Amino acid sequence: MKLVDTHCHLDNEQFDTDRLEVIERIKEQLEFCVNIGYDLESSKKSLELAEKYDFIYAVIGVHPIDIAQYNEQTEKELETLGKNPKVLAIGEIGLDYHWMTEPKDVQQERFIKQLELAKRLNKPVVIHTRDAMEDTVNILKNHPEITGVIHCYPGSLETAKELIDRFYLGIGGTLTFKNAKKTVEVVKNIPLDRIVIETDCPYLTPEPFRGKRNEPIYVEYVAQKIAEIKEVSVEEVKEITTQNAKKLYGIV
Ligand SMILES: [Zn+2]
Image (cartoon, rainbow, N blue to C red):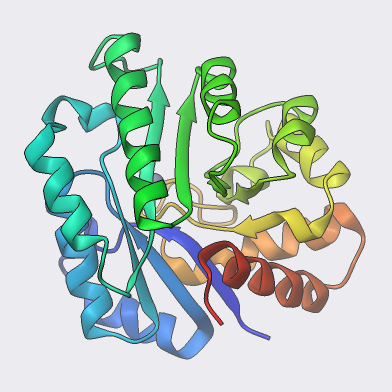
């Protein structure tokens, strides 16, 4: 069974020199990958890639760091793009109280607008949350019909247990870092059928390549680490997380 990269950014300029080679390796080694937009332009680029390759899918939305650009016009364009069958979800959306490019109330209002957009389009969401878990969970509780994934899950085991009835947890390269204690605890105690694997490439490169550019096929190293923590075979991790990715994004 091949793995899925449920969260990558192939339109990033760090892939400008060898994007075709990176895509060729995805085609050979992965089941598929999902390219995630973070603003309107990258959402369009994401869909362009998805329309060109059958093993690449798109997610579209505006990231909390870029949320200043979100207005009625942006929403209209996203809604039109979102009707394309290669668009699997709305994301990455959420709250980021670490960078705080916009105040909390503005971030929350536009996060909620994008949750409602997902609901109208009948699609799951890809959530980004940084230093904002409590508000994120509260907002999600007010939208009980929304499902999706908490990307690069940064929270506690306790919060994970609250979320997994509706959300998958996205686990990436940070799991392989030496200071990953909290994430290791989460992976150890959450059933494998609630976990999906991601790279967030070109960022968050797993060991043994930490410090270099990340790319989708490195999901392999995350799968190995999950297998080690959960004391199961890598094959089992691949099989279950690939099924999870398909369920999450509604791919049959
Ligand atoms: Zn991302």
